Amino acid sequence: MSEAADNFQVPPPLTADASPAPRPTKMRPPAIAVAAIGLIVCVGGIAKFIPGGIGTGAALLFLGIVLFALSFIPLPVIDSSEEPMSPAQKLLGIFYVPSRVFKNLRVHPRWVAAYLAVVILSAVYTFAFTQRVTPERIVNHTIDKLAELGPPFAPPADRLETMRAQQLEDAKNPVQRAGAVVKTFCAAFVFTTVMAALYMLVVLAFGGRMNFWQSLSMVFYAAVPIIVVQKLLSLVLLYVKAPEDIHPILGAETLVQDNLGVLFSPAEHPVLFVLASTIGVLSFYSLWLKALGLRNAGTKVSSGVGWGVAITMWILGTILVVAITALFPNFIS
Image (cartoon, rainbow, N blue to C red):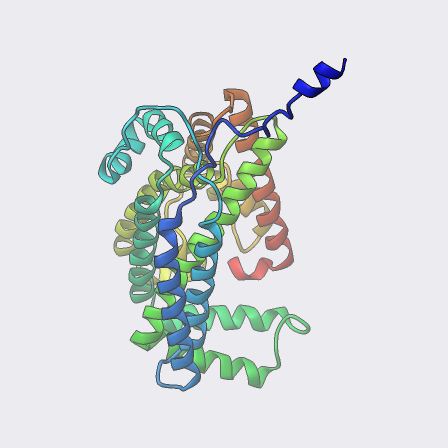
């Protein structure tokens, strides 16, 4: 008994077989640079030598902080010898071999090319739309509809006129317009980050497994075909239609009428118009892309889970848009 006790040795501590998952630390230098630029622009805005610099600088500063925080989220670790597709291969392949692109994103979740494609196309269309419809008509329509809301949603009449004059001046100022593009870049990334986190959480709730970076790259690349079709067709329609026939708010997103919204008048039935607008060719194409992306980009996501998550998110988004329209219906009239 004593001999056994003398020979007893404490077992070595347990060690993990696998090394810790890598993190995208390459994001940190660009994140710090973006935040620093934002801080400089913000100071320039406070000093009043960069028009609109406070808002633009704050957006860049926030984007830099978000990028730096995301750099601590681990990348997926998948045993695969598959080489990453080039950005051009993914941007073209998402149209004709989307499954292959999403499977590649599962192993190599790179999203920058899709992000740039989405925001650049959106910025080009927004610039062309503003030029074609004119800043005066867009600002006047927006302020007039805000005035129709009345208190407590609308400020007093004198403040509304001040807002009208300020927004018109901003819309014509090239520095302010450049700042608006920068804010679009920032807002698009932050919004997509939130959506990617929601998709990941819903996948987990449905019993699947998905890394955040897989979800983010899936959301960006699933948006590419929709944005390309919408913005390119809208650019054509923008110069085919007479400017006075283009709605200054609804047309700012897209001029493509591929949905059941054509059955209702936005002025007479705003809620039904918005609800019907969610049922169309591009909306179903988007739903199919997301279901396919979730299935192939996720680590453990079945086809049923992919469709369940995509439909759930579509329903939640539709409810949110309809609720906002019900509160502020006059903006689309």
